[in-house]
Length: 234
Length: 321
Image (tube, rainbow over the protein chains, first blue to last red):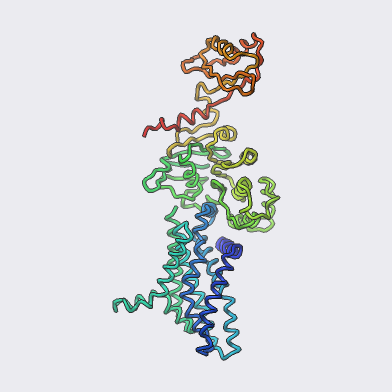
């Protein structure tokens, strides 16, 4: 447990030592800010629904950029060897890195808290969907972080890790938009696998255990896959 | 202390380490020698638990790899080749991270240990520097501090002196000798004099197999004709000197070489292949030269035992493919 915390803190600090954090956060804020506020006054609704509906697609490009370095960089520099020969287990390493990335995406969302605060000046905001939206966003971010972590564990090349991560996250995001092409028998299964419907449910303020279970399963499956990759690679 | 049995490692079809067995006792300094690509690094990586062996067993104290990997890792300090570190961290932050991961939780203890290590490895001036700005030798020292963080019983160093300048090599060697008094050290190198100077025991690996495993003294004693006598004379003509040395009838090969200084004649003298007499031939040469009015400026015997063994055991001809 202590090891996980040590690794997570170190990795989290690493984001802010290098320029990555500042670049990624500003990019995220510019993109979400523009897409959200460009239509906000046209619709004239005092809610964050449009902001949250953007998140899955934006996350599927931003989060792989955050997670791509977690394993790839260490493998490339060689520090992976020093890390693995210290008394830490594979699980500690995978979880530590996962928490660092999740914590970073959560801190990336903090500046967006100013949106609901501003909107309260304009109109009556229903707190349920806002709280649900942020909760959902954290679950979604955690799930995508585990995907990105897995992608990073596969290769020593950060760009490849980024592309694999994007592909995985993007697939989960658009899966329920592809239902049109699927045979009717498996539609419900595909819809369940896609991340979008689960995120939409939570961000409407409906916190259903099935949706939470979905995100927890995705996180578990991909951290476990990372663990297996670490095992197999040595 | 360390028991390795039938250790084998395949990378796909390539056999990097083939059936290595050895025992390393407590307090020994073991040198792992071999040409590039012989399997030294792979062997060390398996000992440290970074690689899983394809087959074979590693037992350290009473712990068995890989079941007790965490316990084993906590009693081993390991410095990989070229000391890979986190380049964006400061030296102090890095050491603190390592100390925490290695389980030195107490703040006071950590601080005390940093003081000791910075004395031992000479880090006090660079504690606040980013690792990326350090020279290779300094990085190596930070790596060494990393390896010795918990004062481990076993220290494994992979080519600790490669790529360093002569001063730094001497420093690292001194550190190894100092800590080697109470610790078990395994280090790999392909610099023979280094192994000769620091190791109690030498294991030579070639193409993944152990080809020699003995104490340094035994290994050297095992080879005949192990010395080159280097002789330089002043005031002598080359032909006269060669004739004189040849006239001793001691079955010596006298080779005239480039003089070490101007105005000298230099020779390398080795016992010839059919020489049966083991007697030291230096007195004969000295007495003979004493009869002339030449001045001896160099008269040194250089042992080439290890180099010769190394060449014999690891040359391409030894393994016709």
